[in-house]
Image 1 (spheres, rainbow, N blue to C red):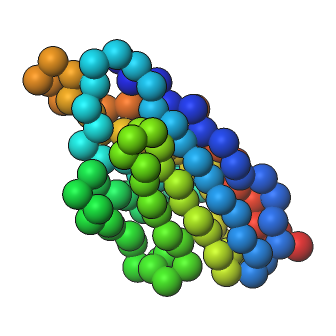
Image 2: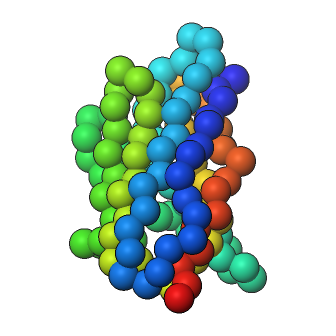
Length: 119
């Protein structure tokens, strides 16, 4: 099993910035990629940002140029820098890790952290 512990989030005014962190822990696992998904009330969970261990990243158009995902492979940690936040960025942000354990794929989720963008 892989456990994810998230930190960051909170209330910020439009145009502000926030930073999320997520650390993975467990036994004998190898991270393939880590990132963030978000779910707003009444909406489906969607990708916010993702990074693979080779450094490649993926963003939806809605956050390109505003969000930056980065990772520390040695610490199995992923970060999400969010700038120029908009009210529509309000959501619960979930950390995700795609890992390999004993040759098998494993998908782990964090408990979620609330991001609220409001004046």
